[in-house]
Length: 467
Figure 1 (tube, rainbow, N blue to C red):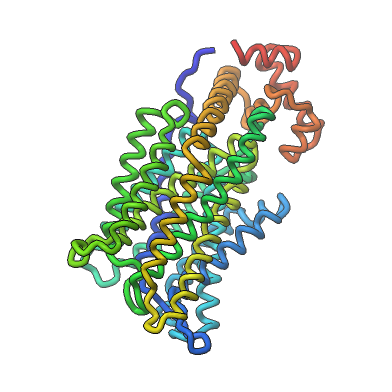
Figure 2: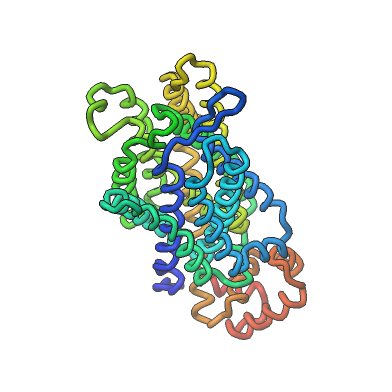
């Protein structure tokens, strides 16, 4: 069967711009503000606003995984997306009104930011699930590039309240989400790969999640290093954004020339992000950077943000291979990432509290570097990435056959959703369970697929897809 150019293979400007706005707001929230501390029993706790926000994000993501399908539909209803954007805008303004030791005000602020930020991220998993992974992965890196450039430009604009531009980003993100996802969808759900591939992917998924948590922990340690209360949360963040933009351009070039399955472009991007982070760890104490605008911490941050884009892409890939919804994959992945980041910031504050001068010691940087190196060498390794690439190649080939068959015979959206399960030999009962519809509905759609494809049985349909 010849493969042509499909509508679903085209990049979506709405998804790219919308997710860029979402990421731009996260960059602003986490790295472009100030180190705000709170006093608890005589102990100064740095980055208190970040710790609280991460805590509410993790709680929300974990709870979301326990929701029923109906509850998830209610949470991701289109009017709710605008409510989340409003909560983010209000929450980002509260620092102007919350006192330094106002614990109640701080908790309200963290709730108004953490809960909707987590839900919008999960909703973006839903939006990216509407496209094949080879498309959505490119969109993630394009969005990261745009977010980095936007943050860089706005940060150097000579206006006293230029930061207000960032507070409008959640509304753009929510509006594009409303246009990008199906009203009743919970993220694309496709037939999983062959059983042996699913078992192999389960192990790879566990390694990715464990590595993600350690990467987040390393970032959390660095977010309290070389910054004191009242100082910039991340000095020289402009350099980090500039390096992130360069990383995104390089990754997009790899994706364009190699493709994920053929040249393992994500593997190369993963390796590059780890290299940048390790380089930053080594340069933190470098004396020749002390008087410059570059810092080892900024280099580490750029590598971490680039690595985050790689991890987001992996969340999408895992959803495609295992047949789980992209919303669930995002919830699980980001819960690990932000949970690790929360633990890192929390532990760094404990270390600070036992220091006479409350300055984070350099061994924290060494430990953060060891976490990253351990993850790269022993958790999610080059060999694991190679195995994942092979599985993705098979999965992409199957998805392409399904797309071609659906377009050639004019299948509806629901028929195209059922088609992969049929080609995998799933029974009507199994398909009904996977898609949360009745068996009779599956049989009705199946008869329509047969009629449009001019076949009379499942086997004839499978044979047709392999021509």
